[in-house]
Length: 252
Image 1 (tube, rainbow, N blue to C red):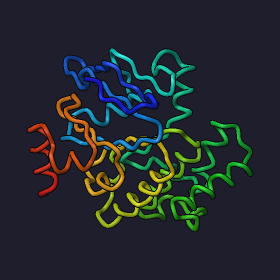
Image 2 (image 1 turned 120 degrees about the horizontal axis):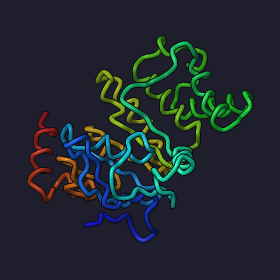
Image 3 (image 1 turned 135 degrees about the vertical axis):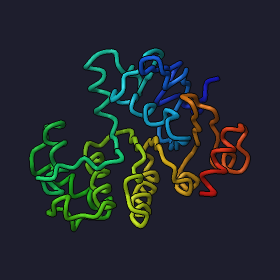
Image 4 (image 1 turned 60 degrees about the horizontal axis):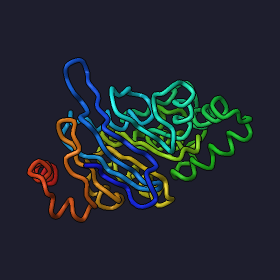
């Protein structure tokens, strides 16, 4: 069954996507359509294929069969199409991956200067704009080691935004943070969602999912088991697997 995104047609489309690691099948015939501006939260047990799914969108993982199409471009056809897709997709990981020898502003300027050919002046202007967006403009001249984990993750979000992507992918962006730092990152992500950015978020933060998601995608054993609006998913999940997952995670 194809999980559709709506009448406007898909901005991101997974069609019968499968992937193996040797004999192990990590993705099994994935069908999912995502509309432009839609916010999707992907949840499920560890090892269910969530991170692999979103990493296939920008070619960080190669898929084995099927098609992934991003705004009309098929991912994985050739280097040119992959580069075009990556130019439209930003990604935030569990780890911040900031260059420790560069200041915050230098970390943010690097992508626009190298990837978009911007001058240092223009890159600095866009970097400061997105540092303000994530609410830490005062940290511009500090080094990553001088920031908290939550601040570093907000810098990582701003760095992705400096490339002005059409799609943002988040791979468990709060899992490496201390509990008191999680909310500051989730608040920034929620504000970003309000701008109309297309977002796919892998997370176990179910409060955030209720607040932000247009649809929940529940995965288990490499399959999409259930797709539903948050109000339906959290109050009346259809599958026994989703019911069991929610009982465990909400009672944790």
